[in-house]
Amino acid sequence: MKVKEIMSFPVIAEDEDVPVAKIIKHMELSRVGSVVITSEGKTIGIIVDQDIAAKVILKDINPDEMKAKEICRHTPLFLFFIIPRKGQVK
Image (tube, rainbow, N blue to C red; front, top):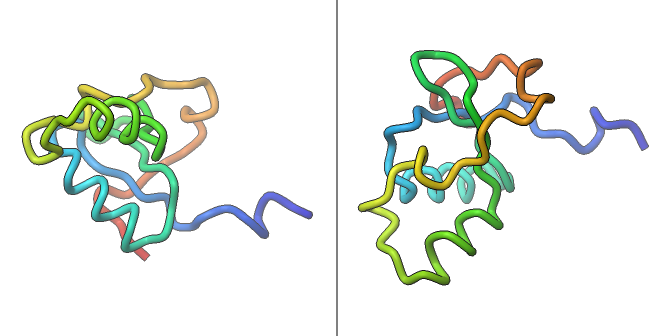
């Protein structure tokens, strides 16, 4: 199996200051498990469904009151090769 057969395209990306609730909505609508997080148009990290479960849901935090930058994983090396388009949903 090739990566292109299982990957999501286009990449879903959001700004670091959006509420986690918006990230959850994009993930559900796009049927993806991760969203790339940007700052001033540059990739700074990623949020995966596990981040939302562990850092928001299990801690009983309102996702409307938490920003993406508070829970994202900051810039794993592979993210430098992703050029996301802000808010793009397939």
